[in-house]
Image (cartoon, rainbow, N blue to C red; front, top):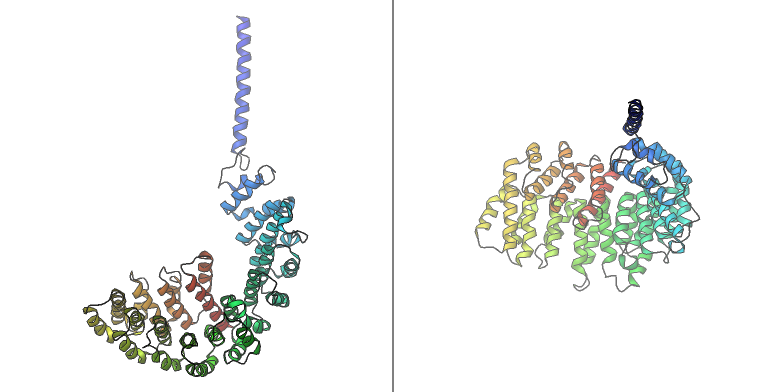
Length: 524
C-alpha cells in the first residue's frame, strides 16, 4: 500500500507539472506578437516581430504590405536598415511608395547603389538594379526634393535601362528643374533607346520648364512621329509659353522642323501644320485661333492629293478645342464631304464650339446623301447640341425606314432631345440626368452643364469621370473644361492610375491628361 501511495503521489506531481507547462505555453501563445506562426494577411503585431527573424522576414514584408497597417512603418524602416539583401529592400521600398512613407526618404537615398552593373553581369547586379528601380520610383512619389541630386546621379551612371527610366520619371514627378539640361541631352541623343527618350519627354512635361519647348516641338515630328503623343502632352503641360514656337512651326517658319519632315518620306505632307495645330488646340490659348485660321486658308489651296482633307480636319479639331466661333464656317463647309471621319471631326468641332446656329447645316447633311455611316455622327451632334426644337424632326425621321447605323443614332438623339425638353436651362434637372440609365442622356447632361457653366455641378460631374461610356467621358471633359475648376484633378489622377495600361479608354484618358494640364495652367 505504501508503494502504491508513493506511486500515486509521483504521478500526481508529474501531471501537475505537465499541466503547468501546457498552461505556460498556451499563455505565451496568447500574448500579442508571440505566436509561433503568424496568420497570413492579419495580425500586424506578429508580422512586425517576424521582421527580426531572417527566416521569416520575406513573409513578414509581404504580409505587412497586404495588411496595410501604417504602424509598421517605423519597424519596416529599421528592417530596411538592418538588412543588406536587395530583394528585401526592393519590397520594402515598394511599401514606402504605396503608403507614402516620407520618413523613409533619408534611408532610401542612402541605400541607392551607384555601382551596380548591367543586369546580365550577375544575379547580384540584377537584384541591385531592381532595388534601385523601386527606390527611384518611391522617391519620385514621396515628393521630397532632397532626392533630386541623387536621382540625377543615378540617371547618369546606371547601367540598367529600367533604373534609368525610373529615375527619369521620378525627376519629372519631383519637378526637378535642375535636371532639365540632362533630360534634354537624353531627348536629343539619337543613340538613346526610344523608350528612354520617351520618358525624358514625359519628365520635361511634368517639370514644365519653357527651356524645353523648342526640343519638344521637334519631337512632334522626329522618328516617324513616334514621340508625337508624349511631346504633345508635354507641351500642353507647359502651356502658354509653348504657343509662339508652335505657331511659328505651324506657319512653316521652323527651319529645323521643316528639315525633319522634308528629309523623311514617311512623314506625310501636312504633318507640320497638323501636329502643331492639334497641340495648340490642346493648350487652349485663344491667341492661337488667328494663325490656325490663316493656316486653314493656306491648306485649302493645296491639291486634293496632298493630304488636304486630313490636315484640314486637324486644324478644325484645334479650333473646336479652342471653342472659337470663327471655326464654324469651316466646320460646316466640310460637313457635306463623302468621308465619315471628316464629317465626324466637323460635327465634333461644331458641338464643342456650341453655337446652335450651325444646327441647320447639321440637319441638312444628316438627312441627305452620303453613306448612312457618314450621317450618323451628324445626328449624334444634333442630339448633343440641339434643343427640343429638333425633337419632332428627329422623330419624323425615325418613322421612315432607316439603315441600322442611322436608326441607332436617331434613337439616341431622340432621348437626348427629350431630356432637353424636360430640363432646358435647369441645372439641377441636368445634374439628375447624369445618373440616367441611358448613356446618351448622361452625355447630353454633361454637355448642357458645361454650356451653362454650372459650377454647382462639379461634384456630380466628378462622380462620372470614370463613366463606362467613352462618349459620356468626353461630355464630362467638355463640362469640366468649360467650368474650369481644379477640383476634379485628384479624381482624374486616381482614374488614370486605376486604368493605366487599359486599351479600352486609351483615347479618352489621354484627353483627361490634356484636361488636367489645361485646368492647372488656367489656375496659375
